[in-house]
Length: 212
Image (cartoon, rainbow, N blue to C red):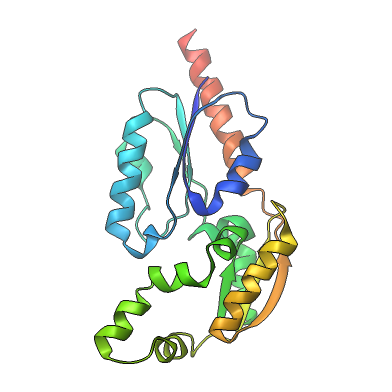
């Protein structure tokens, strides 16, 4: 059995933790974070990476949520693709239920996993194109930030039990300072990646039996 991984780099630590004891992982691809802001480009990149390994493995685990553009992508290939349920990486790492509970508690929530905390505020500003937008409007970047985050009041750091949580929390605090948000913390109990890997293993095992 051979299992391939195509995942967003934002979940690299969580994915590597989930697959570390799996001997059937033969191909692992991590795609740079932030492509969800360009949905068509994200879908095309994911499709390209799947195509690059689909003839080398029996099943592929996709480390993405729907992310605005990936719904149904597994139907485009003749290889089994396990796609975790969730709108995005936050829903996967927090669980969809808790994701919506947190939004109901505080609709103006900016979620940060270790991956997002590590990338920091400058990456967020770059991905959102705030610097270019400010220049185009002839205003200060801070003014754009205040406008964009006017509806946000809370930054929620999600401890997914990877790396150094205190270090990531400090990084999240820096982002909250820039965006004028209060920082709160929660702990993830999601097993979505582990469950998806287990499903991929079951599918791979079934294919092996059919081939015998």
